[in-house]
Length: 345
Image 1 (cartoon, rainbow, N blue to C red):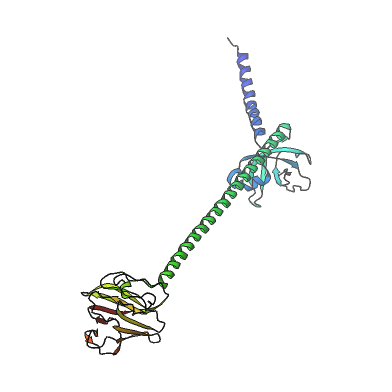
Image 2: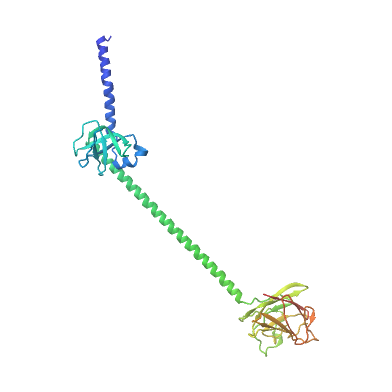
């Protein structure tokens, strides 16, 4: 059983060691806090360090003095050469001494300068130096990794840009090739006179001149004859009609070089004109002649079949021998049993 003196001793020890234990705990926590630079304090003051406890390591500055009647203080220079004001109620440290200052970050309302209200001061020891060295190494490693990542990202962006440019060039080349092929085909098609290959009645451009020695038996009356001679295409055409329906189109071209085109049934003696294959044999060998005038872009039709055997009929009117008329768009021509409609381009 405890005596009254023992109880009194216990109370005294409790009152003594309670505050002492709190001071020891506070002192153990403060040195463990990492020191920051003055530039970092100013840069992140509003977002991170305002009225917070921070630690700064440095040397007591000799080039700047504190002249104030309202507080006591000194300037601390960190390892980067930046200065910060330390306000304190303790004795001022020795000039040029290296210390670790812990305090509350505050901003002066009048000058907007940032300073520390000192709560703890400690000389720099080996543990602090080692921690600072490790922190510096960590920051250097992070900076190197960040630079490496940025360089890799930049290289990737450059490669993507080059790939995009090459794809664009390839697509442009393909499009140019396609356009060139299309233009070449159109030009080639425009330079050729399209042959007519529809039978009964079959209309074709005449072949190269046939020798007078060739016999009629050598001519196939119903075989399509292709023209390989370069000709000048004229702005007009004849549409073959059967029972009022269009069955074939004859594009007019100047093979004679004189603007003259003769029309007649298929025969070796009809050259430089339009040879119409007529099974009914009602068209004359030299039925009519068309004359084109480039200055006026007009076509004139002259009847060569006379006015008795198989005369040329235009829009229902029979033409007399050697009569010439100017053709208009839509005129209908009858030559024997063959009916043609003239159209201008």
